[in-house]
Each structure stands twice: as C-alpha cells, then as structure tokens.
Length: 207
Image (cartoon, rainbow, N blue to C red; front, side):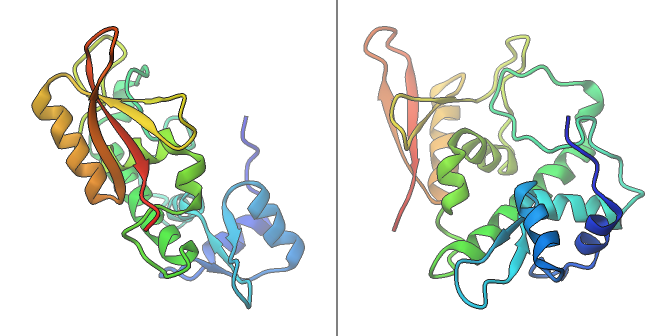
C-alpha cells in the first residue's frame, strides 16, 4: 500500500510551480519525493527537481480538494481487460486521463534533451504498456472491458522496446496506430502467424 504523504511533502508539492512543476526544498526532502516517483532531478545543471506526472496529479488532488478522489488513490493507464469499478468511470476518469497526459507532455519537455514534446521520454521507454495505453486513452480510445467488452488491449512483447496493440476490428486498429504515431511512436500493422490475428507493433520514436 502506498504510504500517505507527510505534512512536509504535501507542503512541497503544493508549493511547486504550477506551470513547470519545479520544486524547492532540502536535498533530503526532494530525494524522498524522487524515491516515491513524485519528482525527478533534471539531468542538466542546475539539476533542479520537478514533479513527475504522478506528482502533478498529487498536486492537483491537494490543491483541488473538491474534485472526486480516484478510487485507487493512484492513477493507472488502462491497458484493456482490467476490472473497473463503475465509480471510476465518467467525467472524473476523463479529468484524470487528461491531467496525466498533460503531465506526460511536461515530463517530455523537461527531460528530452531538445525539450521536445513530440517524442517519448525515458520514462515512457521503461513503462511501454502504461505509456502506450495512456496515449490511447487520452485520445479517446476505449479500453477493452474485463467482461470481454470491445476495445483496445496493449500487451508486452518479446521485444524489449515494443508493445502489441489489439483492437476489435481493422478500422479501430488503424485508428490506434494513427494515434500512437501522432503521439511520437512508430507503429506498423502485422499478422500473428499462428492465429492470423492482426495487431499493431509500436515502439517509442527516438528521433
């Protein structure tokens, strides 16, 4: 279970710059936020610390208490096929996804050497399924339901830098490929030799 934030951590996050997410605090305080995945240390001098997408969401929850809380407490992109509570659907989920995607674009801007938001960042390359699923859900695609409801499914592949995306029909599959390409991924359609099932193989673009 995720430990609750300390009072000092809450103050640091609430005081972060609303535009850039830049943090100010002691080295120990900032390091603690980095360990929790709520902040990252910029690789270029002066090596300031900034909120990650999870940190931005935590700040939003702290500064906008009237917004409904996530049932799980932590945002997770939907790869398709997960059981989802009805309470986690609707406008609240849409706001969560939109906030997470904006945080991801900010993370790209702050961590890509050229400050590009058009290309996936290092975090996305180490969290391929979550990153691809977030790009799809943020663009309005619907994930498959746990009960077999039609929608996309993002899955790991034997390739260390690629995911497979499945969709209920050819048009939906092509739409998923176009969305990922627009989000900075390389995407191509393939056919599984054994099942003849079509899928999209996607990997983060490097240039």
